[in-house]
Image (cartoon, rainbow, N blue to C red; front, side, top):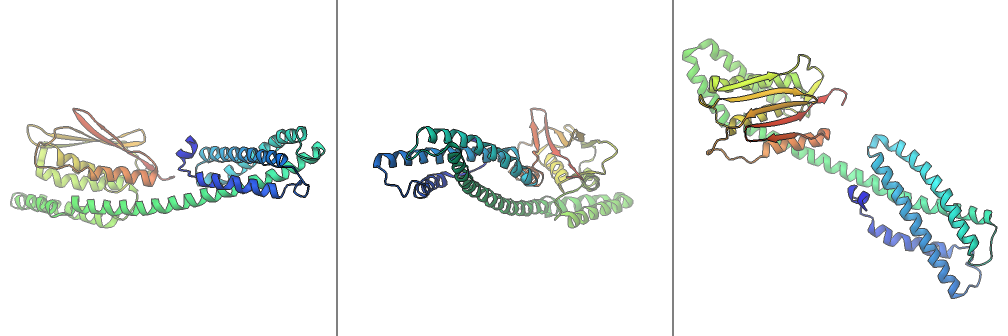
Length: 346
């Protein structure tokens, strides 16, 4: 039952209907069907078939579920089927010996030679286990197919949500308004820096247009985009916003999901006080197989409502695309999010 629940297997009705149907078929196809038998012998025969069929069904079901847990991935299907076939064969031979011995010791009618009885049981066992295996394999195949469709639709939905969040966080009038305000102040003071500001702003928009439909992106490309984004924010906050990189030199084979680093930096700036008295420090580092974004906590007490949608979106997309978990750690002093790195071989 635990294995069934773990795999989401609901086969109650298949067992309630399948076992009685097979018992009836075995009774009608029994070698004793043409012999006049007493009601007592018939009842004993039916009881035996019920026990045998239930035993075979439950054992084959257990083997199937164990193999399904042992080899859960589609790429392991061939290995699972081979190992499952070997285990089933051994089970049939051993179970046939036990049942053959019981039938030989307590026959319903004329006693057959043990070898003949054993061969007959093996034939029936193959048919019975073949039926049960086909039922579970078909249910497993269609279950995986249905799950694949569901995950595909869910991923599309997450992608749409991500694009919506991207538009809200980066191309929204609020973001553009702040950038233009900073530019207006900057133009008369430093025309050369103003040109650089416009170039960086253009880079941000160009990156959004080029990568908003991608599932993964090179970490170096994402960091270049983040550098442009941070530059625009530092024009607003100056030295009150500290960005610290603690990254190794070689990042060529590492990938992340697009805009995740930007969204985490944006969230840190959005929800924390950034001032001369309380500067905000954001540390971007690589720890093991994770890229970590960490900031000191100085939460704004008013003016910002947190929905958690952006962070949850990142968590969901990583789970769907990579089956890896995003780690979120918060204490009284710091807040950090660890994004699993994606390698070229994945």
